[in-house]
Image (cartoon, rainbow, N blue to C red):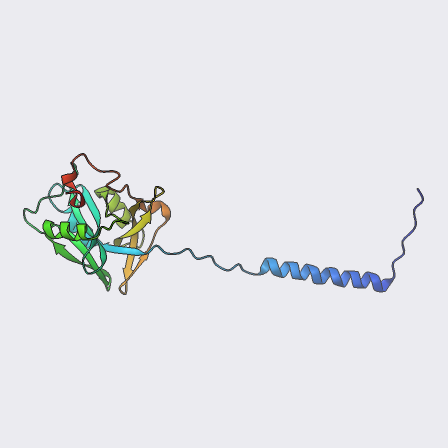
Length: 211
């Protein structure tokens, strides 16, 4: 097959070269443009217990961890109480052992100390037909690990919807500063809870909301 020689004029070559430079510069500028940072939504903290609060729970005789309950007093909050290895609450032999989160103040969390009967009342007040109350347990080691996260001085409680449509808590490491709680650490540092009434011990009397 015969071929035909192509001839290009100098102006057309220059125009093509200029167009190439312009297009190349445009593409380079796109590559050089910094991407907008993607910000993840911070989980909303329903309650926060600072290091002293957590240590007070774990100092109770025979305490092996803590149980966190959805509760309602003046508003929705969380009540925490120390538990033993048999999943029962530590008895009120010397102190009032239940804590109800109130607010953040400076670098601390303010809590009200409740007797067991008061804690049970607030826990049962929180349940509705559409959102029955629940609890979750955490061991001493899990709580210590959360407080050991870099920058943490507290543990936060976050509500989470489960895959079955129910509700549970997650525990997160928190830094309290200027009366604001900020989640610190990574997803691997968070503690995902197994909620009761789905996952409970054999005796309902061990749980404030099941009595």
